[in-house]
Image (tube, helix red, strand yellow):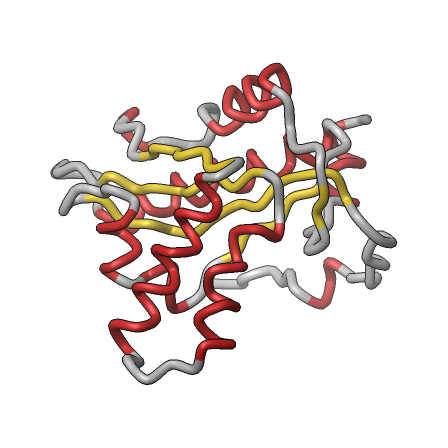
Length: 186
């Protein structure tokens, strides 16, 4: 696939099935992630891969986080939280480890991890995989960070769910660049 065409046609894929990416594909995907813009070469990213039974453990982490905020959560809601990580064969946790630097504020480091995430999505698409970046309240909950073993100076920025695209592909809605781009005249 030509790079520009892939960038223009990539879509998020919410329905993902087995198989997930193999070791060779993951190496290619993470090599793309590591080429993200990175002011001062701080490399503020860390990625956790979650597959197999670990997805069930992550579901338990999500449920515990939700129960911290809502102790009277209905059993059906708890089951929903436990099932969230089962929507794909592989999840990649996007972790930002902010480093003190006089010229690189926290936001730039978070944006660098976001750029790495976009490279992951684009690389997955180029390899014929489906992927979707997911967040939500449970994603940002301190109990989720604890459950993943994140350090105090690390922040979870989301999960990329990956697998084989299931169902029909999303129809691309036409977008016109002129609707979003304008010249600034000073």
